[in-house]
Every structure is written in C-alpha cells, then in structure tokens.
Image (cartoon, rainbow, N blue to C red; front, side, top):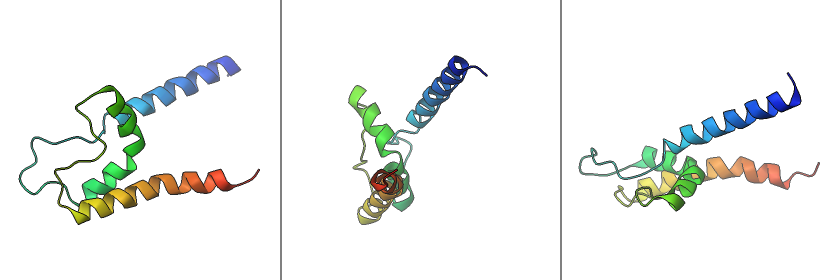
Length: 97
C-alpha cells in the first residue's frame, strides 16, 4: 500500500470514528421517566466528554453534563468516566521518549 493510500485510509477511519462517537453525545433523553440518570449514565457521559464538548460548540441541543440526574451517583460516575478517559492520556504525556 502506498503512503498516500495509507494516509487516506487513516483519515477516513479517523473521520468515521469521530462521527460514530458523535452519535453517542450526551443529551436529555425525552423517553427517560422520572428519576433521571444514575451512576452508569454518568460514567458514560464522563468517558465521551471530549467528543460531547466539541459537538456542544456547534449545537444547542447537546450538553456535556445532564442536569436531569440522580445527584451524587451521577456525579461520581461522571468524574470516574472522565478519569478513565484522561488518566491514560496524562500518563502518556508525562513520559519522555
């Protein structure tokens, strides 16, 4: 495979991944009954925070934090999800090559 074909394939794959993650962006679920979101939704929203943040810059219907939550359990999941995403990135950043 030539270098230009490989670069094209990597670009297409990266765009497809960003679009797939963008489809998972957090927002208010109109089908959700009373009680709101709990720990597991908070965990998921924390993991997808970087993608959700970028999407929220271009639309008003997506927010990075859902205010219709169950309180402390959602918050704990949100922070844990954010730590699961950003922890490895920060560890790799600190390494010297």
